[in-house]
Length: 112
Ligand code: 5GP
Image 1 (cartoon, protein in one colour):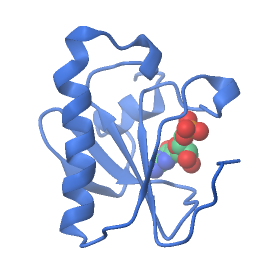
Image 2 (cartoon, rainbow, N blue to C red):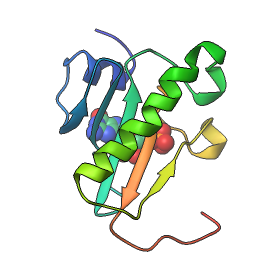
Image 3 (cartoon, rainbow, N blue to C red):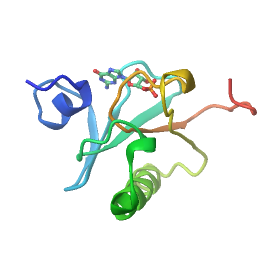
Image 4 (cartoon, rainbow, N blue to C red):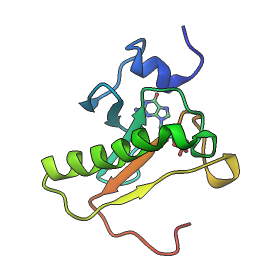
């Protein structure tokens, strides 16, 4: 069993409400949604946080963004916010890179 909870989801060791999957990324509903739509999209490659990525991850990071767009397009949702928390002081609690996709309510700016 892997320690990283998101790797466990990738490896189907624990369940998740999966909304999209391809060879590079997996997307599933957040267990504690902060908006009516709150999806997490993660690379299958283990990257602990965005700051640990490198030039070799360029295509994967682009793929992550385009997968987010595809998921929202399939849901016919045009207004949404994408968030990456990088590091604990920025709010990161799970150390496997993930993109939050939030939609279905108004969002304030600046973010809290
Ligand atoms: P972070 O705070 O690291 O940016 O976001 C981690 C997110 O993962 C949180 O929104 C949290 O609710 C979600 N999360 C943590 N554990 C699980 C889990 O086991 N399953 C799912 N679906 N979401 C999780």
